[in-house]
Amino acid sequence: MGVLLDLIQRGGWVMYPILCCSLAALAIIMERIWSLRRSKVAPRNLIYSVNDLLAKRQWPEAAFLCQEGRTSAERLIRQSLKMIGRSRLMFKDVMEETGRREAIFLSSHLELLGVIAAVSPLLGLLGTVSGMINAFGAVAQAGMGNPGVLAGGIGQALLTTAAGLVVAIPAMVIHRLLLNRVEALTGELEDLSTDLLEILAAPDQVPSVVPLS
Image (cartoon, rainbow, N blue to C red):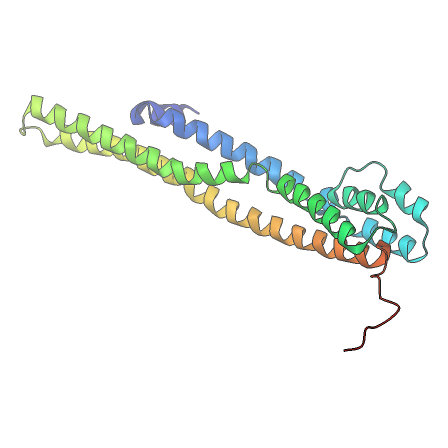
């Protein structure tokens, strides 16, 4: 802890927003890893059980399994059960809207994580530029007879660049991995919506008389 505080003090004021970015990124990553677990989004045992009940036309039992609505799959199934017998077009529109809401929930805070990954190295660069200005100002006052003043100032200035990259690189990599996770889970929810559409929506109306060409 003492070493960290020393680095922050040596790096100057820019180290504090970089530290805030690192804490915010860590909080977002931990929250999204927890929220994007399969058991919190689309538990397979629930989906298998509901599909089996729906195939047997046991609507109340399927609704009972999803009554708490804690997962995205449960909320999707509950909404579909309210649309039993509706036209395919209406059913599809409602399910697409529900799916969009769930996709927004799954990707929440990831945009902020991407911003942190992009801004952190820029903050580091700002700190470096500011430090270089101070270093050359010190050299201008002390003269070139002491090169250690310039070397020490440059070394101190580069601390912020290193700190910004240390925050940005893991944040960027994990941001991409979490986006891939969201895309995979969203795809599974779309497949579930398609299955529900085929089981619960009213069949397309076929005209009883086919007009002659």
